[in-house]
Figure 1 (cartoon, helix red, strand yellow):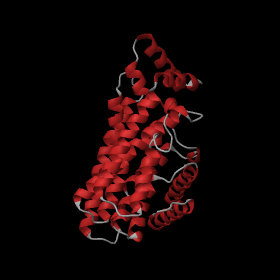
Figure 2 (figure 1 turned 120 degrees about the vertical axis):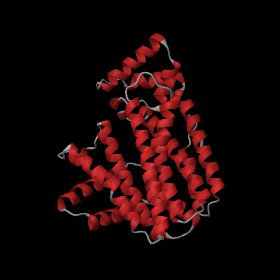
Figure 3 (figure 1 turned 45 degrees about the vertical axis):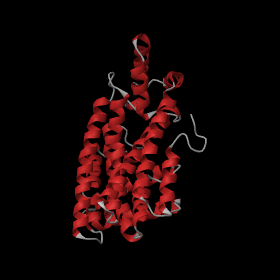
Figure 4 (figure 1 turned 60 degrees about the vertical axis):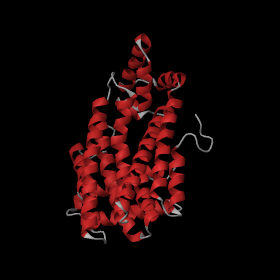
Amino acid sequence: MHWTSQRTEELLGLASEFVRFHVHHPRQLKFLQRALAGLQTQLKDLESPPFFMTIPLLVHSAIRDDEPAARVLAIATTLLFLGIDILDDIADGDLPNHWQGFKSSEIQLMGATLLATLPQIAIATLKTSSQVIADMHKTLAEALLRMSAGQESDLTLSESDNLTSEVVEASVVAKSGEEIGLFASLAAQLAQAPQTVVEHYAVMGRELGTAGQLVSDCHDLFQSQVSRDLANGTRTFPLALYLEKKRGQERQEFLLLLGQARQGRPVLKSVRQCLHESGVLRMTAFVVELHCQRAQEALLKAKPLEPAASALRATIDNISFFTKGKVV
């Protein structure tokens, strides 16, 4: 499946039409349209297609070709992602500029609306058996519970001085990994794949989502002009790797840098220097590669059909630091 920006725009348009059809009040529509417009702006800055659109379509196509049903699911996963993203931004105190002029309580309500109502309605409209729809709703609810636990762990770790890379990685798996695993599982269920195949795709998505988040954490720390994670006090995997290796004064000096970043001090360059010299970027790259290999193994077990199989393999490869000469 060749993905284009036009295809992204098409799905966003379908999501907007779906929202417009189901809302109950003009002001509710205004909020939801603002959320979708903000998402559209965010997607323009992405170098690769968004997982919440591509994974449902690719997984479904890897099992059976039924584009109309898969597109409805992609609308559901887009709205679901948007709700999760809004609530995550609220928790981090990092709302995008397009929410200026809106009360935080109103934004929170829209996040909850996107998370807990519209995706479920979209799934209920799918042209499939009532049993498949019931199974998909159960999968969605169970995944949201696991993601909630992952988010709670993420909030607990914020600004923590005593944490391990293992704990942080587990939090990423439970939150970001579980999200992409959910999208893949729903697509496999919609395609009426055997339960073993659904589970293979769930593992593939979970490993892919975990790897993708670790790469995003590295980009925030090592490439972005401003680190949102440092500003928010988020203890991402590279930071946890560094802290668990250091003791004494060196550790205390780094914690002081992290505290200064939280206060808005310009210390990103110093933090990056410490991280680079310690080799944590390369160590993180190896962990990313491990998750990518697990994703490829799960995909192989699922026995996907072409051309979706090649597209899924390429999606996983593009995450790795070690493909196409991207060794760090």
